Length: 420
Image 1 (cartoon, rainbow, N blue to C red):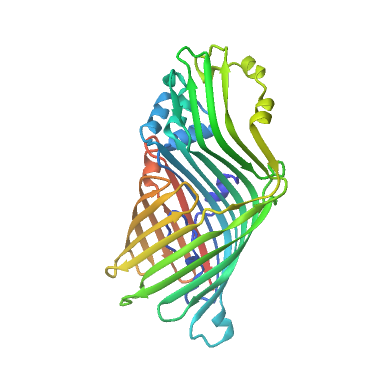
Image 2 (cartoon, rainbow, N blue to C red):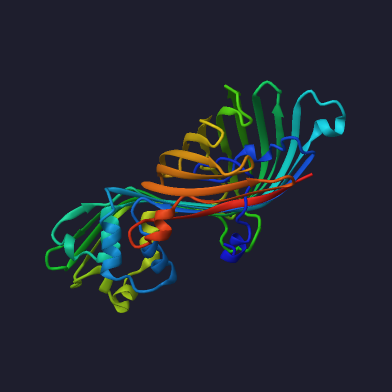
């Protein structure tokens, strides 16, 4: 993952409406310009339970105090979500009608090059308690802690497509992308039970799990460990166009695609149980190195697991979104929408935005949202569409920035484009 300084250098986006991602085909609309060239970037971290302070402390390897752990535990339900998106890139959009002469409609050809990373996690509360508070609290009982799921994608994307405005208030867009698979890691644990005896002399574990990874030895920025394809689709139509900015309804499908990982990729599946007897263990966090050395990890894997090296295919966490934009007056407008990501430990994301136009070319919007990888969130964004330059900057998580000990959300997104 690139240094954070690089991401913050790309915090300006095309003037578009976003859900829990700054990426939309609407960014390629050049309006009346012949050529648009831009850069865009985003960091989107959200969790329904794990606070920003916990995530930062854990990532830095610092000591997790009981207060930090309890703050996250107090927000937890039976299953808890976490998601992270880091994307940045460059793009250009050409209005073909300008080059063809007569222009009864608007037809744009666009191309974009992006570096993209997505991580999502689902963790049961009982598993979190076992890992970070130990097994003493579960002595004498068997607990079911299945449902853990983790996925990490890193890839580069070359995207091209067409955006068409028929001049009657309808906009269509379609794209095709080549994907260079850089890195993939996945854990899926549908079943896991854990038992510790009253006096701590027996630990029993039953599980079903599947682990997949790309070739981790072939590492480095933009190295190729697989290839794939994705497509994006968008349809937008205007209604009640009595103001300079049309009211519209938009539906969009993003990242519908796959990556086939190379023949050096690995898959491990396992479904069995292990019981440790004869050791007096007060807490699994206190197991000494000498005990661990006496257990043959290799024999356990060979006896109870199946390992395969070869190609496999994964599907991207595709997103479908709906937006309704309604102008109230010259100064006020509303944006209402929802989005959902498939196979991404995601819940439906709903948001409401109110826009205030400081001038005809500058507006600021406040956002209230719920779902996705978080719970209730508050955001703010500002956009400026000047004569030749357009800027956009925003966050969906004011609460995470202001109170990191109580909330789990951090996001900054935006970009800049030049119109010629």
